[in-house]
Length: 178
Figure 1 (spheres, rainbow, N blue to C red):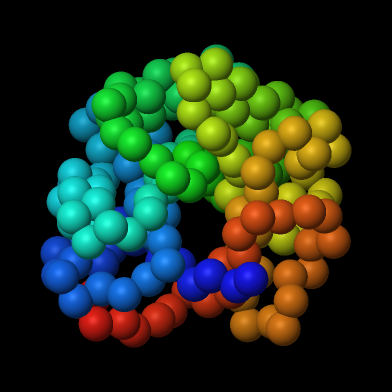
Figure 2: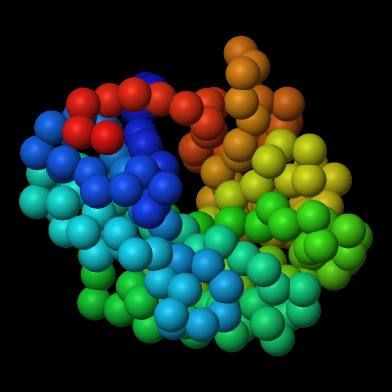
């Protein structure tokens, strides 16, 4: 079964959720290590999707370069999503070049620190990455333990050969309301 979902954030500006049709929405909650970095449209997107009965997940865009910074990001993310109900996982988005340059062990330590912290808080967690770094920079225990959302656009199928639950196949799209 193939479901089609959307990834939304403040980049889409104000969304008219009454016009949106999607099987699910993954909503950016924010980025970085401060609560002030909450996505300015997170609350509106969450409530709009919920009101339309579109199942939701969320994600946090990372800048962490140490496991300690990842835990700080996890704590801020948890404070922002507290009290919210998710039908899809909440994801850690790791794609900054300064992170990827750290190598497999350090990248894996950063990812593990965030995912473990959020999972211990009771959430279904996952990792969002592009196919190549996911293949080459993440230890297998992480990929087998957590849900994977792989980004690999403009291809017939992802170049990532491991198991994944979601595949982002395009950076673009037009649907009513957005």
